[in-house]
Length: 367
Image (cartoon, rainbow, N blue to C red; front, side, top):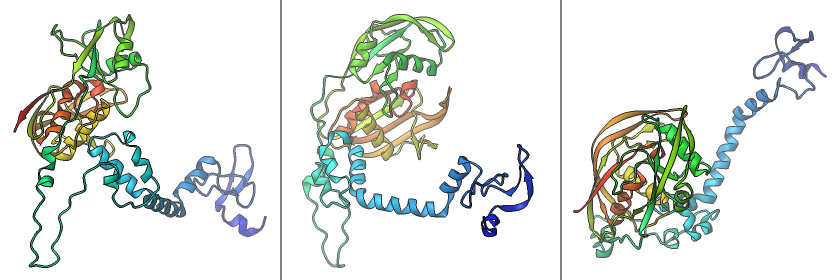
């Protein structure tokens, strides 16, 4: 091995390794002593080799190039996915979406997916050019959107009797997960609550968003662990939860009162939202439709008035604490958005509904 090859490892005096070997070679990352296997061996182990690989300037340049290529190939497809979710439509239910994947920039993609054309303000080419008269149909389109046909029942409740008084919500969540016996997914499968019924009893219950989940756990009776406490769990019969009444097209006022704190998070769950905005409400309405596997017409929210304050809830475990809002919000919206928000009576509003958060009262008024 020539002297130039040795020079890359020399960072000081010789060092003695645990086996008694003396070396002048040191790792190029951590500086630990090592015995190189050849002129290209610069790192003491796999961890240092990976660290050098992922922090190299050439790696950042390559990532930027790959990101630019991906954006160029899938730019319209990514826009379409976001537009469908904002409209409360599950992208998986739109077969035409796959034609946009990898197609780059595609003109007329909104028409291909059955979405209304995007409305943007047009600038006049000259100072004296008259502004075009707005089309009456387009001007009234958001308020003329229809709810569409809907099923009679949207969720199914099951009472969980026998749970010890004072049981933590995260322990009841774990029990519900054990009963449902399905892998956790990004979209919630249930909400912790007591389904409303003629008995008027209080206690723990679970509102399930899939009928087969409810039928699988209904009328079960067995011993169970809730945290560190042993109990005799008795699951009640299935309570079918009716869909909200269908609404005629028009303008509506939706009043939402929080019974338990409502959680919204943005930027990768790094900051809580305690004053919901129009975008927050639209995302919540879309999430409700996705959880319950429903679709409706184009949703439109004109304004959100907030009378809320922040409240911190300690769930514990890997969830830790969650900051949500309590109080009231008043939403001015069209019929599809009002109907979608009414689903929160059963399914809860916002995130962490599977831990009992987001229980709300909803009142819909014709504006």
